[in-house]
Image (cartoon, rainbow, N blue to C red; front, side):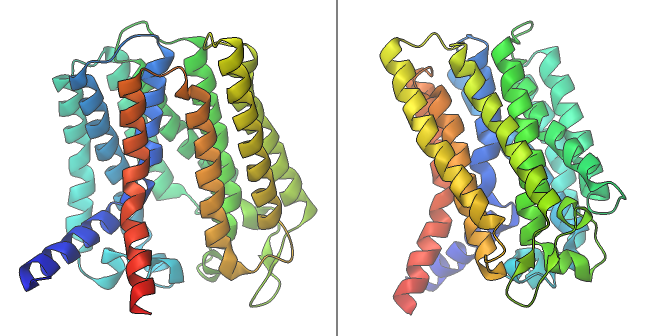
Length: 342
């Protein structure tokens, strides 16, 4: 590869890491699925606009978080390759980039003809996410900030559904509730355990720390019963919110489509429960937590896609799959390249 192309590749790779692009699939999924809950068709402009707004919201959330948490990230092994940590991007420039995403999202919403509900939802999402980034792990009651973050992500559900005035349905509400509960679980349990040692070093307060999780030794963690009870309770509610729209058949599936969706959801849910048991096991090594959390995220979000898949119009399903899978490719390519070098 020529030197100019090599430099361009490095710049692009740094940019994708800077905005945490591998996680973009979740952000894009929320408004795309919620728009489907309304039963209204989407134009090509609206689908493109949804992706644009989701990317702006995603960049705001993660870049602002990285700016605020930069001192912590400099001592977190999982963040050593981050452009901010490596000094490739100045904190002031990163903050300006994050704040710029707010008017960008509003302009794109206007371009695609969003309704008043979309503007309200988007504004709520930005405000609550900023509040979480400033207060998360810095309050006496971290479960409260978990809820704040959950509602912030859930606002993207109402953003997608609010593109057409008066289009919010009971399915929209189920999806919103699932997202909120899901974020409370992921942030309060999975993410808290993954970052536990570094958070304790900095005096941070996460839900896992509040519920008594501590390092057992350099390899393992102490997972108290109350944290397991908290995690499994959230998991049960999350699965209930996933299955209930199917049991009510709010999608209008035929018997064959309904049965196929149910079987796929049961298999993926079993996988999620298995991984959660691994994460909460006292025998799980701290070094393995990041990989386990990644596997849980993939299985659980695949469940959400499966739930809607047979209800989506073909073109919308294709856009959804592209939005979910393409962000994962840079990491995959990086892993293959590392293996070849080894």
